Every structure is written in C-alpha cells, then in structure tokens.
Length: 303
Image (cartoon, rainbow, N blue to C red; front, side, top):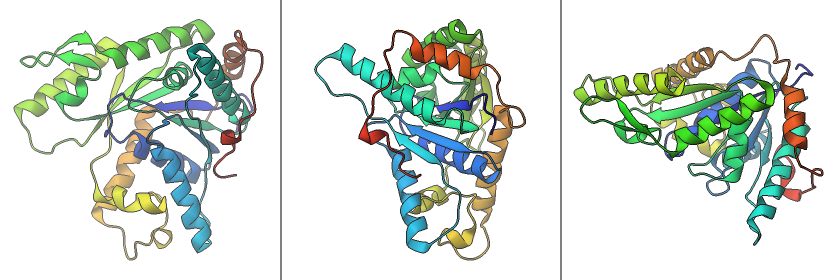
C-alpha cells in the first residue's frame, strides 16, 4: 500500500442487469488475492447487491471458519430529509468521510453505483480514476450511452449517462488536471456472427471514439456467478471454500481468465500508486464543507 492514496475504480451504468455488482466484487477479490489492500463502497441504496455479496461472504466465512481475503466495505444510503440541499450536503459529508477513512490505507477503492442517477452516483463518478461501464452486447444496452442509428450503428445523440460522465470528467479535470479513464466492457458477447452483432461492435467502437473511452471484452453470462452469490464466493476462491467440490469446470476457468483479461485491459497502476490523488481529494473534500459527520451506517460491514 502506498501512502499517496488509493486508485478509485467506479463501476457504473444507468442500466440494470449488466453485471455491475458482480464485476465490482470479482475485481475486488481478484486484487485481494494479488496482494493489494481493497476497500469497497456501495452507493446503491435500493438494490445493495454489492453489500449483500459482502455480507454473504462474511456469513459463509464465519459459519465455516474459512480463511479467505476480505474487503473493507461501506454502504452509503441516500439521505431522506425534506430539504434537497441538506440531503446533498449530508451525502457529500458521508461520502467524503468514507473516502478519508480508506484512501491512505487501501491500494484500490472500488465503488458500485446504482442503475439510476443520484447525488452519490455523481460524487462517485467525479472521483473515479478508472470508470468501468459493463454493457450487454446489444443495441438496447448501447442506448444508455447514445441513440444509435439502426442502419449504420453510428451514434446520433448522447444519452443522459454519457453526459453525466462528461460532466464528471470536467469536474475531475478542474481538480487535478487529469481525466477519467473510461472503459466500456462488452459483456455476454455472442459467439454467433450476425448483422446485429456487427452493428453492436461497430456502434461500440464508434461510440468509444466519440466519448474518449476504450473498449474491452468483459465477462460472459455464466450460471456459476448465480451459484456463488448466496455464499459470497468468487471464481478466484479455492473450490474447497465454495462448496463446489472437484475440479474447476471449463466455465469456472473461463470466468477466471475473463476477469484477468479485464484487469489487464484496465491498465491499473498495479506497480506504482498515483502521486497526486490525496492533494486533489483534499481540495474536493474541503470545497465549501465544514467537516464530516458521524453516522452509524458508515461502520464497515467487515473489519
């Protein structure tokens, strides 16, 4: 762990069902097994899938006295007061405090965001060093980023989420002169060639160029992910710890390799921590703020 600050990975997409939480958790556990210190933050106040994943892991580990790596985890709910401005202030302070508690202790902070726009979603995106947007390989999923010409596959008009990321990039540029590395991860890629698949591929590539993003192959749809969620395990955990006996299946092995390939495509600073993050985050945190507040729900799920 480098004292100069953690690298923030945000997993974001305003469409549900793209595998955001599964991706966030598997990235966290993979990096833990690689020897890094990891903190995870869940700002999805409705689904809380990442938080449930972490809690399932904690419960399984305790019940079976296992020794597997754990992430320090926070769930940050939305404020529900009558004053919108006061809610935003409270959410800012909660988010800033969670970040302050782990940014000098963790190598990576992984933030899972909901499939809808919230103040916490925007705060998370503005602090991202790397933004991973999982996309199912379909024109429907591409529509969350831009309206696509059905004949040519070319983007015609940017959608709300793409504009949200653009605003976050501008905020980030104003803070430390750097931008967000945005990676579009293509999930559930069909093995069968079709006109629709070619349109999707062309559309994503053209859209990435317009957005200043990169494209990476993501993760396939596999039954094993649904099997592992109830016990909080991942494809990187030893099979004897996951209640799956015997040798790993081809699906298991393929899933591991897909995540390793995704991490490689993200170009994360695995050998050198970013040097300018702490100063930039102090500027961000202190902008018009009086100080963090204490909230019971900020306690880590796992210590």
